[in-house]
Length: 257
Image 1 (cartoon, helix red, strand yellow):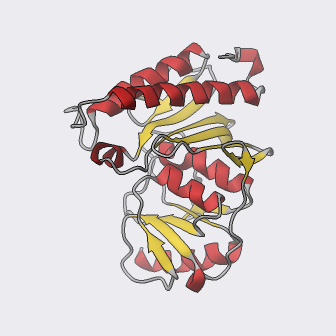
Image 2 (image 1 turned 180 degrees about the horizontal axis):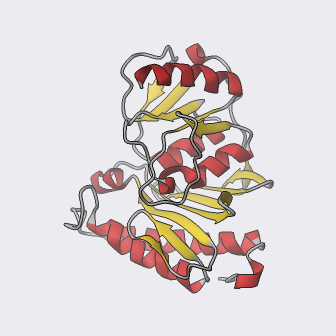
Image 3 (image 1 turned 90 degrees about the vertical axis):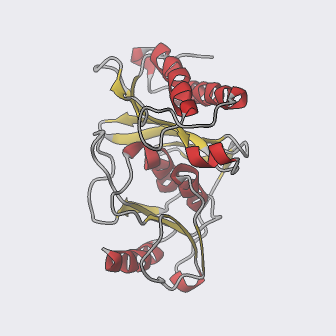
């Protein structure tokens, strides 16, 4: 593995190499996991979440990064570049054998996503994106669907809406990071957070960059900055292939409050 030094984080290929190595060690942890039960440390955390976090953080620390993780907060050298990571997004899916869960990593630069990887461990899909450099699935450039009409859209969400928005079809898949990547890939037309409490930055920042790099529209339902690296902040992301679809979906989402 080529490890970028502090002075060479502009080498995005090296950063992606580290991210792939971090995803690989999480895959190894999941492959060896026999205890799929709770960690006993906090609600909704599984024992393998902690083990995966430990393995992932070691790779990132060794590469010279500070880390903002769902499982362990902000750690490492405060002067180092910050990587936001969700070691296992879709932990309940993983624990139940639902083949839709991923490791998501994103390098922030001046508060904005710069390089990201979302690795679906169940399917082998790996989405990557570099700010200004496009987005890819397993090395092949991707594009959104171009859908503009909510009535014909296939949409996905986290949580459930309070009313029917007039979409064509909808899905609830259970893992926000790979869900959003499906919008970037043109598999889904839009995705939205329906929870009243919102999502943490680790849930969506890596895949938000993937979406933005294909020209999809990404924002917060309530117009807030999406990329605040604060463990206590929550946001309600929404993504759509086009501005027309984004606006139509957002109008319906705001009716739910």
